[in-house]
Image (cartoon, rainbow, N blue to C red):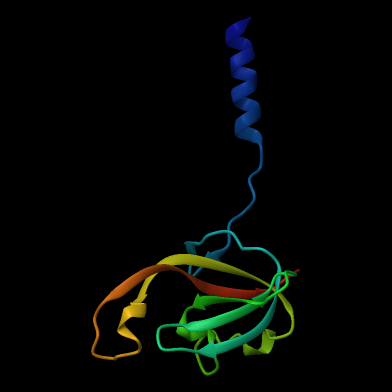
Length: 120
């Protein structure tokens, strides 16, 4: 009886459908983040700064891949003013202590915005 109950529970757990993850270039990516309003994309020394409004008192600036800014291969400027979701992944960027010096080789590891898509 216990073996049958365990088997039923295992089958039930295995048959549950999982939420599909977002893929980027065929590789799995982190699930989309919260739904926010994209306020701006700003070129910076170490990242493309993704400015979002999550309905709080102030907009938040998040470091993003340079390719998300104007002219990049994943230019997201057409989504400014719209509700979006985004994905992040750990990446190295130039260290804040470099203060924009292109010869500085120090780096920081941050959660970098990699994709921005229109919210459903």
